[in-house]
Image 1 (spheres, rainbow, N blue to C red):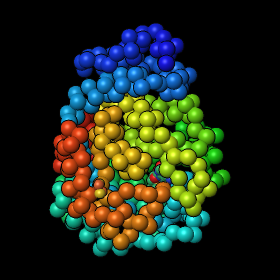
Image 2 (cartoon, rainbow, N blue to C red):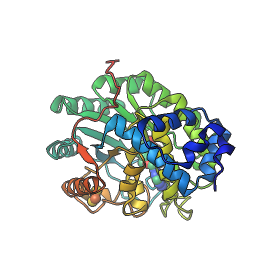
Image 3 (tube, rainbow, N blue to C red):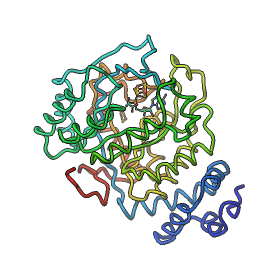
Image 4 (cartoon, rainbow, N blue to C red):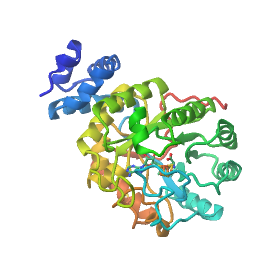
Length: 372
Ligand code: SAM
Ligand code: SF4
Ligand code: FES
């Protein structure tokens, strides 16, 4: 059983009993934000089901206060699985020869957007490996074209590490948001998950440059990567506190059989949910997705993630015939389903969990467009 006084005496009562008001939850949130690395690590390592329930209840109050019961949808278009990078955990890494590589054409991507718009999505996320064929100029054209056709949607990119000037170009072309998980904020752990030449420092520099370019920034990490410790996760939380991103994407690591980490164990559902609650408490206004990975780990993973503090879902809009080839990890859900099927499925899941789908752009509650 965790001894809350080991963490911080003032948190004792707050961790022993679930918050019963927004004010109590806010007080816990303030206490948590004062914890140092060792204290955060201890909280993560020693959390019991009771502590988790307290954190979950408080996260629920904050989420309710800032976002109500709303869940925002982001239509995800996985437009290329070609990647020049070689992350050890990822099924579409360059060295994996068992991948059938594909690249959607501009016309196919625009058709996905049309279908997404008709399904009511007002955010599109364009995601890919780091595909040299999609140069920044080509991406900028695509962004501008989507922006011209659908002025009322938010456009998110997730295409990896680029030069600062390229980020500015894409922002000027009309992209609003950018997702680039830092993966882990522990440099040694980062080095154990990536080949030489891919560094945490570079990843973190990109995140800062994205913010400077005027993007709403999404950072994040995997939970349960081989060798990850509670101290690594504490460093993730502290790095995020420094970065203050608008979105934080976390999900369990899930092995993919053709990768160097293919025989390792997946991350744990409980720890993923605990971290979602901690993130909601440390970043009350953040947009937190209930990821496809958590839905892959457990049939009700996404519903549980919503209950832990998440408020975003990212249904797949990619053409069905290519989905199976965007196999970041094994047994990924939704690969056999059409976009319209996922839309209906999500509606049911969200409502059965007691939430409502919001069809707006889903900007952060205090976001002000700077136009930079
Ligand atoms: N290439 C871009 C990048 O790396 O930022 C965007 C696409 S990448 C596939 C998106 C995310 O997938 C990564 O940030 C990583 O966290 C996640 N991912 C990759 N392999 C995974 C695995 N085996 N289990 C869980 N998540 C994984
Ligand atoms: Fe490429 Fe992204 Fe996968 Fe790394 S995580 S191999 S950059 S697609
Ligand atoms: Fe895709 Fe349920 S969300 S089938």
